[in-house]
Image 1 (cartoon, rainbow, N blue to C red):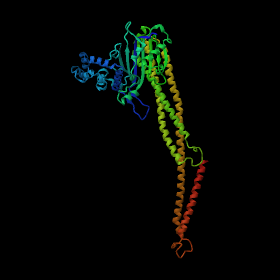
Image 2: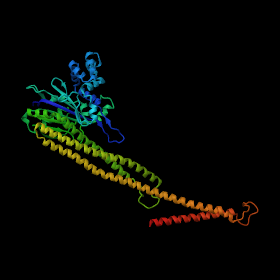
Image 3: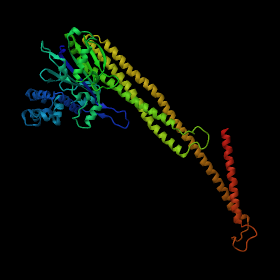
Length: 546
């Protein structure tokens, strides 16, 4: 059986990173991903793909041309160093171009790339909340940097800033040439992106930059397109060809390791096959295979290709926000389980009227539970707030996504209703799920508030009862002591003073000593006063109860 051939294949790689990484943890601070860090990642990505040497040689030619030096020097005096580099080839820059083996370990290359290739006002524009601009300096019409990939492919990369995210498009294509642009399916494997593309970071980067870039990663999209023999020109009949291209491109043994098939549709006169897991982030992200049969389809694709980075950026943000909402919802459910477990461990006799209601140990335990639940309440409220933020973010990017599809329709006069309807369905499902989650979690919020108020009420009631008991005891003892003291201080005046004798002394008196009378009278009156105080307290408590 003859191996299938794809003609004039093209691959477009899209990767996205958010500039400011916001966390849902109240104790953690937001992190900003600067342009220099992204340049370090982009350079490594190009190096892993075997494209960095081509870029360096291209920059070497541009920088060493006297005309380009004067053009870069005259508008900006700080670029005078470029002229120095041209006239003194022993300086670091030219040494760097010559020693290509060590350029990745040198920060000088990153400095040169940022200074010469990327715009210097990048941070100023992002601080001013500019929603959309090209990343390359002097971008001209499309803001790209051209590169070559082996002898058969050429292309460019196209960095942009879209709303709050870094966007990077790498486009490689096989030039059309009659009889010489056919590529066997098995040879598509050489276009396989490096692992650093799929992970959104590179293991060669230093920590913590490596982790930071990975955390800011929105995801990737791959669009592989090319001409196919029109003999199999049916949407369902060509699916096997798309599956074969997918498996070859990724270099996997079976399609089980690839993203699952999601949808297929007519697109610009060709057949578009979409592979992605909408409910979990797949290692290979989103992959689109576009089989083209007419030259007109390629012309339409080229007409809208500058809208694709924006379109896929909105889509990646929507899917990632939905996946993040699943994580927050799961944590909120765990919080609800903690609330329920706290309620189940309430002391068993809190609803009885048998005193004492709570022991000292139980009272301390309930006080600690109040503190734990208050802390949990703060986290729980933050999780619900995050879910609302995810829902709003999805809605904003959904509108941007649909507006971009509309612009693409107008640009190439094509009907994208099928794409729009399918996207609307899945994105609407995301929003509906988050709305349902919020309704459910609101019940948990009420349960949490009820648990806190119940425990606080139990503690306050028990503490108030303990305070009243202590107050009563103090009152009883105080009354007794006061009455006893009064009697003791006055009873001695009733009797005539006389010498006091002990039992072993002679002579014994004919009646007890006045001190004995005073002592006995003090105890007697103190007891009567205490009993009277107890009776009065009970009487007042009984009246309050009625």
